[in-house]
Length: 127
Image 1 (cartoon, helix red, strand yellow):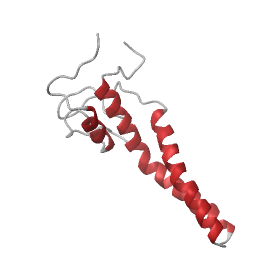
Image 2 (image 1 turned 30 degrees about the vertical axis):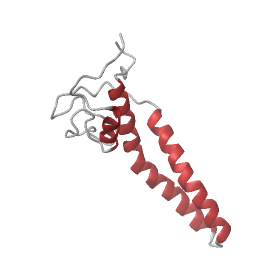
Image 3 (image 1 turned 120 degrees about the horizontal axis):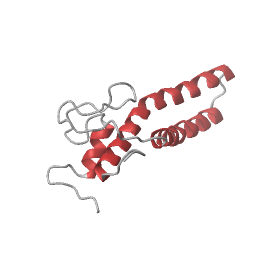
Image 4 (image 1 turned 90 degrees about the vertical axis):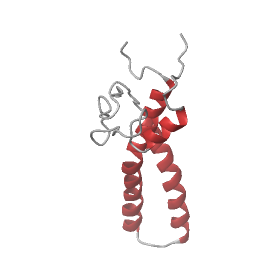
């Protein structure tokens, strides 16, 4: 049976935006995470079940992709034009990459949780 959106369900783009913001993809008011990357079992506002949705490796993959495309060109551009000591480079670029990854990872996971929820995919290997 094909999945159809009910009349009160938000469309896929709204659910993705809400997930990016760390909010429930259904109502947009409840929190999506109870800890850094641990989703709530259900929304405290609308009681939508969210705990079973697993994004597995998608969020780290997207985070690595985005961070790599930001940090690598910056590092190459700066290293070719500057002559600062090696310890500066070996401190700056990993710190920048780590900070970006810490900021982007929960947003990437929220994006995928919102996407999985909006498409009606089961989100887990269980029935």
